[in-house]
Amino acid sequence: MNRSRLFFASALLLAAVLGGLAVLAVLALQALVPGLGSNKAQVERIVHGYLLENPSILREMMERLQQQENAEAQKAQDGAQAAVPAALPALTTPFASAWAGNPNGDVTVTVFMDYACGYCRASLPGLAELIAKDPNVRVVYREYPVLGEPSVVAARVALAAAQQGKFRAFHDALFASGGPSNATITAALAKAGLDPAATQKLANSDAIAKEIDANHQLGAKLAMNGTPAWVVGKQILYGARDYQALADAVAIARKTK
Image (cartoon, rainbow, N blue to C red; front, side, top):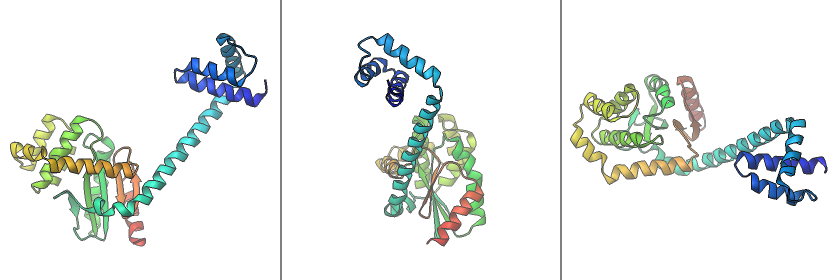
């Protein structure tokens, strides 16, 4: 049995076993390696022995898998970057008062956040510093609940707060509370000076449901698999960012306008 055939057979069996598909792997090996017959134990013994004698195969397989995943991720990000120009009107138009900074700023930073996201919370000081230091930046907040039902409830209430001109007050209070729950949402409403009953009525509206759905559609087009995610000018950034990273992205956006 030559090395390349056995290597391929070994890889097939290992992948199938790891995926709980050992029987299918054996059938595939029997088709690939003539003469093994129908003895499942024989096939497994041969491959098991070969893998023990050549453990570097496992490393090679993992490296190849990582390369493949990296290539697929890069392809998705390249496609997302190409989709930004057409999406800019939707990205840069805030929902009611869900924005901060200079309304006529020359660079817009659009941020997708989830109130249950620790990385979003960690990015808030850098974003606040950017707003304070750069008078020509506009920030647009997009509600992007991806971490469960409490996040969806919080996002709806935040947009209802935006309709009442109190988005930032509620947004900051809820993030400061440590995470979305009935208790923290109620407390954030009180801190923002909002009436709970009136706000809840707005939160249940079709307009707010459509806004969250539209944000999810935008996120899908832009390969946003988690939060936070950012669009700065026409650049997409994924993950937490501090002040310097955001300031650098803004500087690039200004140069490439």
